[in-house]
Length: 130
Image (tube, rainbow, N blue to C red):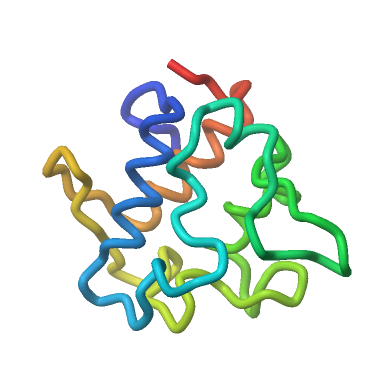
């Protein structure tokens, strides 16, 4: 599924914020070690690592243009979890759940399937900033 519009970094941040703010989440992201790691600059997001998380003792880069290797995407999508880490948000609900949707900061309601497709589009189309 192609996105309805060009996806840019602020869209990715808006998706992650909406997922974190979902009133149905069973755990508050602010109580996690990584916190709201997406609330950084484009450069920090695309070149940085996820705070307080590691994979086999190594820091985890936030972004990889290959969706199969992109940590933040795999954490949202993978079952039972990417790099032996649980699917996010911890204890759900997950973007992969049937009927999942969240309200974005601009008031738009978006499905988990559309979030998934839009993240893949962003990653595979040179991770546009603007």
